[in-house]
Length: 196
Image (cartoon, rainbow, N blue to C red):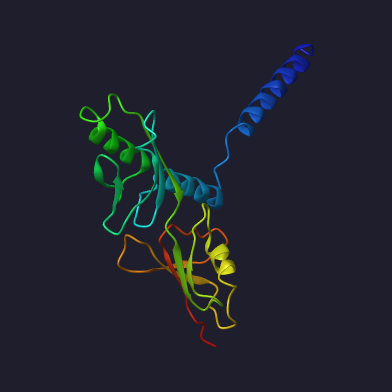
C-alpha cells in the first residue's frame, strides 16, 4: 500500500495543476472602458449620413459620374446623370446600393459604386469654454478633445457633467463627463457654469 501513496499524490497534483491551468485560460470580462470602445467602433461602423457630410463617390469605369459630393440641406446629393439622390440617414453601403439601383439598366451596365465619408459634419461647442463655436469633426473625438480645441475650460466651467444634443434629437442629455465621453458628428456640446 505504501508504494501507491506517491502515485496517488502525483496523479492528484497533476489534476490540480490541470484544473488551475484551465481556469487561468478563461477569458476575462472586459472593463467598462474597453466595452465603451467596442460600442464606439460599432457606432462608427453604422454611421448615418447627415447634412454637411462630404462624400467621395466612385462609379468604377465612369470618371464623369465620380467625384466629391456634399449632403445638402435637403439631405440629398446631386449626381450627374441621375440627379438628386436621398442620402440622409443612410449608411455608406446603403447609399452605394441606392446609387446602383438608380444607375442600373438605363445608364450603366452592372455599375459598381464605392462611397466614403471624407469630411464629417461639424460639431458645436458652447458655454464655459474660451472659444465657443463650430469645429470640424475628427474620428474618435471626445468631449475633452473638443474642449481643448475650443481653448479649454473657463474658470467657471462645471467639469463633471456635460450636456450633449445629438443631431437627431430635440433635447440635450446630461452625461457624466469622463475622458472617454465621445462626440458624434453634428453634436452640440454645452458646458454649464458651476455654482460656487
